[in-house]
Length: 256
Figure 1 (cartoon, helix red, strand yellow):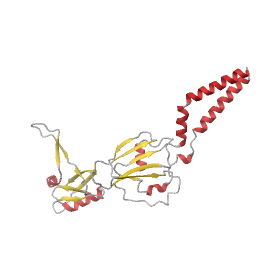
Figure 2 (cartoon, rainbow, N blue to C red):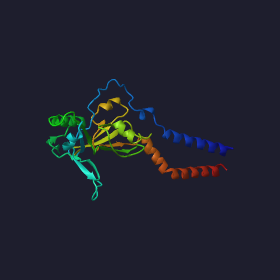
Figure 3 (cartoon, rainbow, N blue to C red):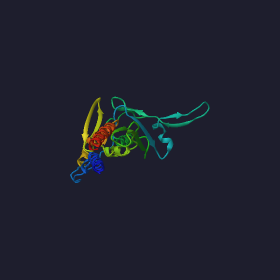
């Protein structure tokens, strides 16, 4: 009878210890917990063009023939005797922050977003064509999300901007063990790598210049202490079981 009560007691204690070690408080998992009205929003979110970026620029006009001089194309899948398909050539931004554009020649593009470059080209070609539509896209806009997220990886961004929370959404959001108040963003600017830590439980984080990501940013989510402790417990589960078995066997021998 005493042995049975002891086994029940040991089971309850063990279960309670494991349960307590896996508890995560609300403050550790809830985003943006403070007041929202204190934040000043920055409307200029579009990614800025940088040296070594790859751009596509498409000019469209009411009369298609009028836009041909401004659209560099290349043949794709062409074989002998066949025309194949055509697609737009890409523009590589030079180290000086410029591109060579048909008819216009050298254009400074560094520091502009896609909307600003589109308007700049539209204004410049207005003396040649009227009512042109210029679409600009940054092809190498990609970010990496690593650490305690459900689907870590590198993602190509189709839009003109992406926020930190949107990037985490692409990666399936943080796991329950992700550290929300200390998310690292690693960024390289002019050959210098910097890193900052952002607190996703504080809404004022959205005003940080690192909240909106740029080309080749890396986001790293560190595991909270609970995860590290849990990993340690799981890695040593065999040892714990062996110790518990030894103790129970010893007590059974003594009591009997």
